[in-house]
Amino acid sequence: MSRRRRGVIGGPGLYIIPRTYLLAVVALLAAGIERLRRQGLDFEAMREDRISNALSAQMEAAKRGGISCNIRWETRPTIHYDPEDPQKTGIVDFKFHWVTYLNSNSEYLGVEAKKNGASGAVTSTDYIDGGVLDFVSGKYGRGHNHGVMMTYVVGSTVVHVTSVIHKAMTRRAGECKQTSAFSPDNSLCSHPHTHRSCHTQDGSGCNITLLHLFFDFTDNTPSQQIA
Image (cartoon, rainbow, N blue to C red; front, side, top):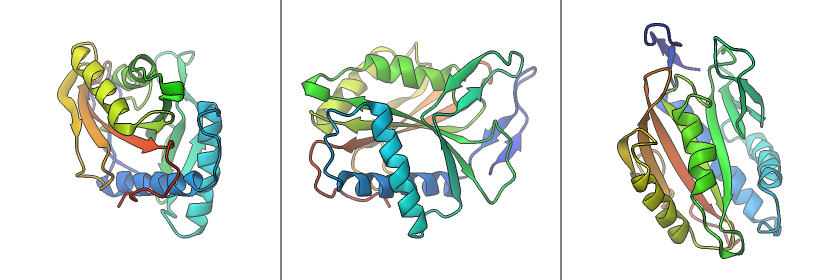
């Protein structure tokens, strides 16, 4: 699924996820989201993991329809992220693989999902502490050049949620080891609420780019599809 290059001395190998693979995953996520939004579910009342379960089912349906057929994934798998200590584990929401390549357990694209805005309460704490910093620490995507943060926006607006996240990422830039600030970026897809940020990852010493996707589940009318 990826090209491999040597890592830092004593560290893991670095895995370069091809752009075509990243685009295929994003397209599949987008197709699943669009299908899920049409289900008319009470997303604000649903737990985050249940939304992810429902999304996985809709991605399966989209894949049967011919979208990103070379993709397979696991939902909330256990990840052994430290090659020196098998007891150190993490659980990422989605772990994507490209089926046309033989891949090891450590070669994947990690997607961490967050629900934000329920009852109008928008927070950045879990987004950063339970998501962004897990990629920065190498708990998710250790030695990878890309990772994905995905937000289910409920009970608020995408504009407000992204504004809160932007301010928090700016305030905690040092802690997040940012090398490029959280900012809008549609170079990988046409969805209007896509952002990205770059970080130096602990352990691997590599630079990991995080793609931030924000999806509106408050208004369940069809939204712009990601290209």
